[in-house]
Length: 174
Image (cartoon, rainbow, N blue to C red; front, side, top):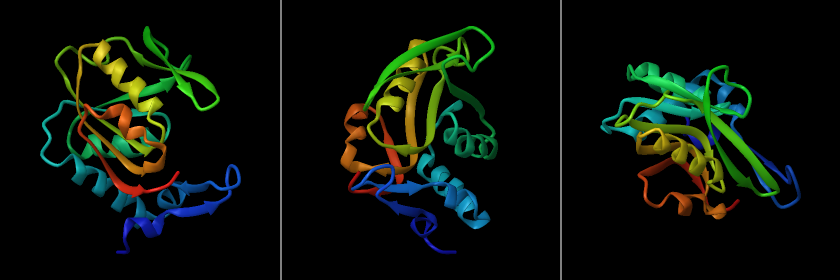
């Protein structure tokens, strides 16, 4: 099996000149790549003791659900505002050009639960920081954050210095 980095398609000058877009769909479209990605995320979790996996839509679902299934843990989704049918808690956060809101079902994390967050990409860290705040607002404790890819040049990790965070692939630029 080839290294996970070889499954990632890099697209220069997208969405704008000077940016190299790291395309996760090329991993998903290859059975071996998908299998390897889930296995490597799970390896990063290691022996961490936890109760529930949390993942943001949509690619956090793709990678978080098989990890939760393999480790016999629950999975809790984080959605864009207005997508969950029951009572929710909401967190607003800043984007590069504006803001956004994410939600979780109220009570989906119980006080004292240990949480692992799984996502495909760590960029500026805004979304992940908002997810952490939602979990903590419900009384949960984030014990690990694992991303498949990290764009280190965007310094998202700096917003999460207090947390145990690992990435499978780290790209030095943005």
